[in-house]
Image (tube, rainbow, N blue to C red; front, side):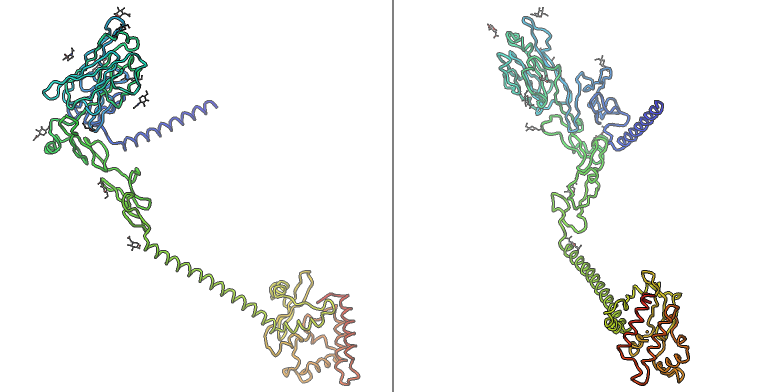
Length: 558
Ligand SMILES: *[C@@H]1O[C@H](CO)[C@@H](O)[C@H](O)[C@H]1NC(C)=O
Ligand SMILES: *[C@@H]1O[C@H](CO)[C@@H](O)[C@H](O)[C@H]1NC(C)=O
Ligand SMILES: *[C@@H]1O[C@H](CO)[C@@H](O)[C@H](O)[C@H]1NC(C)=O
Ligand SMILES: *[C@@H]1O[C@H](CO)[C@@H](O)[C@H](O)[C@H]1NC(C)=O
Ligand SMILES: *[C@@H]1O[C@H](CO)[C@@H](O)[C@H](O)[C@H]1NC(C)=O
Ligand SMILES: *[C@@H]1O[C@H](CO)[C@@H](O)[C@H](O)[C@H]1NC(C)=O
Ligand SMILES: *[C@@H]1O[C@H](CO)[C@@H](O)[C@H](O)[C@H]1NC(C)=O
Ligand SMILES: *[C@@H]1O[C@H](CO)[C@@H](O)[C@H](O)[C@H]1NC(C)=O
Ligand SMILES: *[C@@H]1O[C@H](CO)[C@@H](O)[C@H](O)[C@H]1NC(C)=O
Ligand SMILES: *[C@@H]1O[C@H](CO)[C@@H](O)[C@H](O)[C@H]1NC(C)=O
């Protein structure tokens, strides 16, 4: 168990490492190089972009040397070969360095631990007059800032005073505990001095030192606690630029020394920057380090584009295009005429859709009508056949007998089909002139004989219905003389004693022989020539009823 889980976690670690390696490789491939290959990219927390570098071959020239002292922990980058730490390099020509604070400190009686004169010797550059301020902090204090503007000497200063710690206001630097002055443009060879009027007499308890420094104003917010705590160094912003080649136009002429590389452009250091030189930046639509190379930004990929929702974004060199998708038109950009639904195409679409839909509806409706018509025709045809086959006549005859029970029943085609196993050839028990007789079974397994009409001849429908025995026509010249009339033929066969031979196949079985004989006898009596010899209709009816009842006792229906 332990071994297994151990192996499992080992494998998991391996997989994770692999993933990390892949991710790293991908990131490196995609990341734009910010430094020259083989050069230190960072020192401590500072990124070192070209033209800056830590050694020859890594920087553009010695003006851009950053010394990384790795004996410090963490490694500390220094400005040139000075002892001034660098904390930020901005590609817009600004550099943040940490400058020493000047201080004049006392215990109750003596001046102690003072660095009351600090200097900022910056050979080829100046401090940012816009971003920095000369600041003095203390309650019995004043400070000077000295330097040179061109050939002239400059000396400025401010006084800061207060009675007690509670008198000073946090966030406010107007002379009470803190004073500030702007820095004049182009000030060089700066020295900063901090002093006390009376050796901080009566205030040294909460304000042991007078402080003076040049600070990036955006990084400073005075508070009463600064009366006792000011860090050893403060952030100061200085300018940098490519110098010694003139400004853009001039610099561009010497291709070997011109620092702005592929897809970048040159711009002059702004008027506030007294360093005469130029800077480079990537053209719009490009990214990277302009002193190495800039590459196209895929705005469509990173989503930083203005294409409207209904536009297709296509990346092109240095820009991207927005093309309205089908059915829309307009500029395609959110700021321009965005993509609007193309009215004309909408109308066409509507018409096409409408026509198509109408056609489909028409098709469905006409098909439905056709099938309904066909069905109706089938029903009518069935009705017609029912009529033609004497269905109505049969119905009428049956309804006449409806008084008595269990006379006969009209079966539907479906029932008959089922009874005869769909008029199976094997079920045929006889063939007559007008139809075929099938043996069938009703639902309750009662065997029945079913006669199916063959030829439809309107004149013989009645005959077909009444023909209930010989399967022969009433009068047929095709038969011999004595057989020509079915009546005579009937009497003849009855006299000859071969009556059963003329009956259709399947009509006679062991159960009904006696009954058929009796009915035949009755029929013979009805056919007597002399009226007195014929039975009355009453007698015939009574005799038939009697026979029917006897039949019912023996068999139900056949
Ligand atoms: C690095 O810093 C240490 C300690 O401050 C100093 O002794 C050493 O000379 C420095 N090294 C360089 C190369 O500046
Ligand atoms: C002030 O500092 C001096 C020199 O370090 C020392 O001799 C003296 O005792 C200190 N006085 C007080 C009140 O701490
Ligand atoms: C402060 O230092 C600078 C440079 O070393 C010097 O020129 C200046 O005179 C000094 N100020 C004082 C008051 O000593
Ligand atoms: C300066 O600090 C005070 C309180 O210490 C705060 O109210 C104020 O917002 C801060 N101002 C800035 C610009 O940070
Ligand atoms: C310090 O306080 C004492 C006693 O109140 C006073 O005489 C002296 O003038 C004060 N010093 C300063 C510089 O205000
Ligand atoms: C001023 O005091 C604040 C709060 O204690 C501190 O964070 C800040 O570093 C101080 N400013 C300077 C320049 O030391
Ligand atoms: C161009 O710059 C290179 C390198 O800085 C320099 O050696 C060369 O003299 C310059 N050419 C001209 C015409 O200024
Ligand atoms: C340049 O200086 C002017 C006034 O001296 C100031 O308004 C402006 O913000 C400065 N520009 C920069 C980029 O610092
Ligand atoms: C990109 O294309 C748009 C529209 O054609 C144009 O307005 C914009 O200035 C272009 N941007 C660049 C960097 O060429
Ligand atoms: C609108 O769509 C129609 C049909 O697709 C096309 O012919 C026409 O040019 C489009 N109109 C515009 C302004 O794009």
